[in-house]
Length: 305
Ligand SMILES: Cc1cc2nc3c(=O)[nH]c(=O)nc-3n(C[C@H](O)[C@H](O)[C@H](O)COP(=O)(O)OP(=O)(O)OC[C@H]3O[C@@H](n4cnc5c(N)ncnc54)[C@H](O)[C@@H]3O)c2cc1C
Figure 1 (cartoon, rainbow, N blue to C red):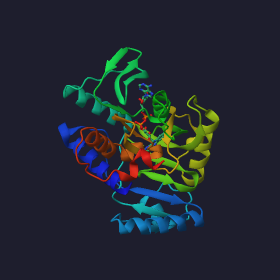
Figure 2 (cartoon, rainbow, N blue to C red; figure 1 turned 180 degrees about the vertical axis):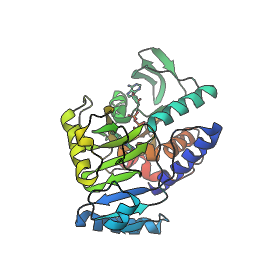
Figure 3 (cartoon, protein in one colour; figure 1 turned 30 degrees about the horizontal axis):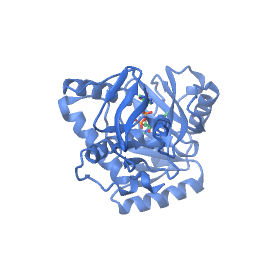
Figure 4 (cartoon, rainbow, N blue to C red; figure 1 turned 90 degrees about the vertical axis):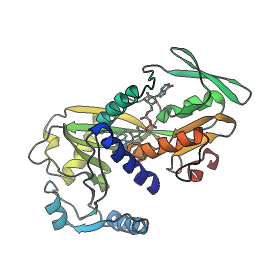
C-alpha cells in the first residue's frame, strides 16, 4: 500500500507537469492531530514502522504544532509528515478528462452498464443504457457498485459501501493553512483554493444513500473540538456525500478475474482512492495488456478472498 501511495504521488507530479495542468497539486505535507494519548501512541508506533519504509515524520508537541498551524484550538500532539501532498479532486478529474479527449480517447458519459454477454469464459460485450458495446477486454472500476456488476457474472466480490460526507467552507482568517487529519474525530481537512474542505464519517450502508444534514453536523462538531475555524456558526458553500468501496482487509483489489480471463477489476480503495488511484490505474493497465507489472500485484489479487 505504501508503494502504491508513493508511486501514485510521483504520477500526480508527472501529470501536473504535463502541459502544466493545474489541479491544485501541492507537496506541502500533512499534519495528524491527536487529542487522545492512546491514539497518539498508536500512531507513533505505526509511523515508526513506516520510517523503516523510508517515510520520514516528526512528532510535535502542542506548542510546536500550533506554531506550524495557528488554527489549532486544542491538541495533545501531532505527527507531521513533510512529504505528503494534496490536490483538488474535482479539478483533477476535469483536467484528466480534457487530457484524455485531446489524446483521442473516446469518453462515453452518462451511460450505465446493465449486464454482460459472455460465451464460455469470455465476455464479449457490455449491455448498456446506450446499446451493446463489444470489447476484447473489460476493466470494471465502478467503485462501490462494482460488486453488483460482477454479480451478473456470478463472480463474488467482497465489497461493502461506506458513506462519507464532505463540506466546503469559504476561507476566513482562522482557516487552517495546512492539510490536516483530525485523528480522534476522523476528519480530513484540505485547503483548496476555492475554500476549506472538511470530510469524514464512514457509515457502512447499502448502495442507496442520500445526503444527511445530521451526519454532516457530526463533522462540524468534530472540527469545533480541534480547530478555531468557526464553521459551526456559518453555512457551508457546498455539501455532498459519496460511497467508498471497502474490502474486508482494507486492501484494494487490482486483479484479473480467474474464471473470465478477459475481465479485470480495480476497486476497493475505500478512503484512499485519490491517494492510491494513479498507480492502481497503471497496474491494471499493465495487467490487462499482459505486461510485467511495475509493482507486485500478488497482495491485490481477488483470489485472496
Ligand atoms: C467524503 C469523501 C471524502 C474522501 N476523501 C478522500 C481523500 O481525502 N483522499 C483519498 O485518497 N480518498 C478520499 N475518498 C475516497 C475516494 O473518493 C474513493 O476511494 C474513490 O472515489 C474510489 O474511486 P473509484 O473510481 O473506485 O470509485 P468512484 O469514485 O465511486 O467511481 C466509480 C464510477 O463508476 C460509475 N458507475 C457505477 N456503476 C456504474 C454502472 N453500472 N455503469 C457505468 N458506470 C458506473 C460511477 O458513476 C462512478 O463514476 C473520499 C471519499 C468520500 C466519500
